[in-house]
Length: 230
Image 1: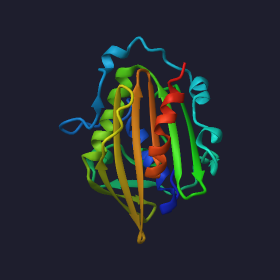
Image 2: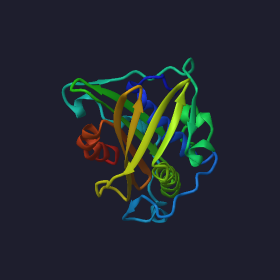
Image 3: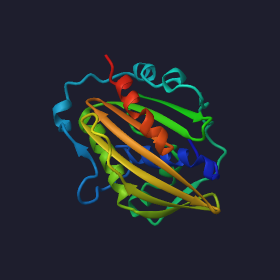
């Protein structure tokens, strides 16, 4: 997925920055001192949890009927044809190169599913599910959240358009075995947009919900319940 140069599409940029940087096959992102994760169960104890296939994950994604009135599922973005993105002012993310910002890489786990929705009450929400060994999910997610919260302010150039980004770690609800959450504020051409991103690892399943803060908070619990059902 690449990113169009518009403040209204920063949600796609957020997912691109976060999920590509998680890739175990990419350049390593060294964690900042003191992990941002809140943990109840060590990942090493989760090796017996079953890994779900991509179709199984897709069946556990939220749909319009789960979200309620006013939600419309967005079509997947076509690849190619958009501006390149360059990260400035955050060495941990700069090392990953432009692929990290455009999302042309992605988490290096074969089992995944994704859905994005617009809300008529103003806002968007994206859900992503991954499945794999608990220790790998924990390591990849922890590294990128530490890297992003370790850079409280940086900038990206989407084509020739600068977008200023600030990050703030926030408490995550006590769900699952591990959890991470932060707020990102995107500023471009006089407009600001705040995106919340919360990740929950429950055994061999990783849930990431991103979007308008109120929508993320509203649907996180339901998303986790459905993702881990059965």
